[in-house]
Length: 334
Image (cartoon, rainbow, N blue to C red; front, side, top):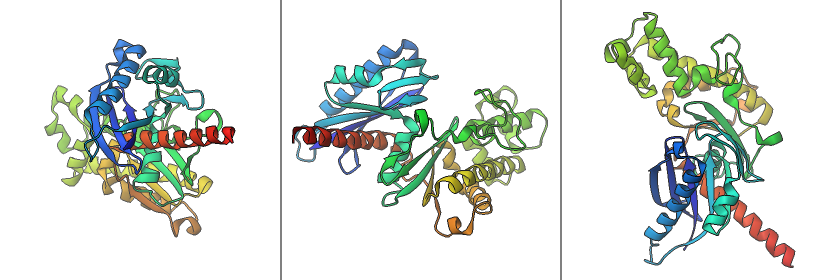
């Protein structure tokens, strides 16, 4: 049985999975990243996890599997053509030739890309977007990012920097963003942005059930999931924050729809677990801002494999690149 390794690298954890050619996760491992030990240690952990996964898994026939290639989804700016992690702030990496080092260590083809792109790639081809030609995917987490898949291929733009939806500056917003701009979408509509808005409101004295849930110093424990819980109890502050986040996302996506004309928008990431609390105001705002010709057939859906999409996407990205590479080699021999 031929499989592909998919690795989703985060600042806290690394998730490594073996994925069949059909896009099914058949085996998965999770380990702490320990980025503070440096890039060499993290790359060695990735390689060791891939080797452990292959050694510990047997196919349905009980036989060892054959690993064809590995795909790695990395945070931050990535040059997938050169295989270089240009900048990953939460890992402390800059201009790291990650693909070549892992290739030499594992002795098999290794392909890297930005983690959001690989996540969306997996969802577009093997998740909620399966069978759909033109897909925009958005992840809502600590920040907000997006990617676009057209007829099975990722769109990159100049310098591989397309998809920074979270850094669209929104009219009427003014909070500073770590990127240096003010009023970026993600300062209000990301999971961390929503929590930050809630904490600010609580500290300013706004009435909310969250105050009794998280008194005093416990306010630091507040999460986006708690906002959803308060929303379900009719808490006015939580309702306001979540609906505002959805409306802002809808407004930002209206620009993307008009420019790119997707058939489907997939919403994923931790913040998307709020479900209709965000999706309904998002859709309402988006549909009010685009032409009827876009509205008629546009679908807005949650990710199907939110937990495994990063692994599946990285593995299927590797399959896509490996197949293209193998075809090129065969053509050169012909």
